[in-house]
Image (cartoon, rainbow, N blue to C red):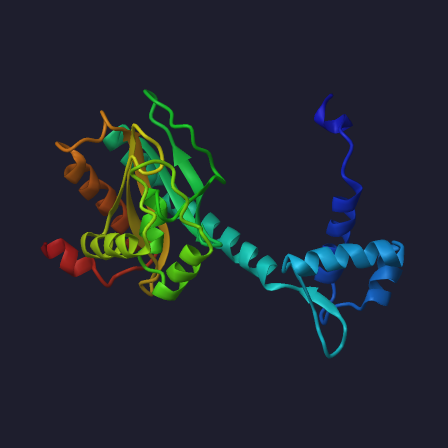
Length: 264
């Protein structure tokens, strides 16, 4: 069946209609107003609103009873816009990194305490089974470790308590103490290594991207097999990735480390 003939999901269409109606209002809408605008039965509409509210996509004011956009929608929008800008800005640097290392290059941002891949470049010789939009653990991937390195300890503690450090194999770091030690090393050397911690036979090296205020807004990484990234070339590849991340940072207005790095 072609995509044009595949039926849409009515409940999703109704939810989108509600979001569009709320986007057109300045101060939110009450249940009665949404019933009038949407033409949906009150019972069905209430179930949709409750579902969106529970997922934090909508917020109901306790004072007025009006429904408004929730924090999650704003967070998704901000992540998307920020990621788009960074991806466009970083594209030539990422392509150059791929050509210089002949490894798969990823760029990712932090979203809901996971690394989300927003750009990927594969060399002609090989392809890694990853994709844009893929979510990676912060404790076992090069992108995730770098993004986690600059999070407050309280957030890491909360993630650990929620069992968000699943074990993939015997190399995966699952201890909060060991992970915190790893993050300290990352902050000193400004790059992270996934040494077969997510998948046996593969390594990944990631480095942070800073904005003009020095906040980590993204990360860049290269991924390859243990035969492509090994003890003899790991340090050299890591320095290449780190240099690429710094160049992207400078293009975003980051200046704090520029002079110090050039003197090193």
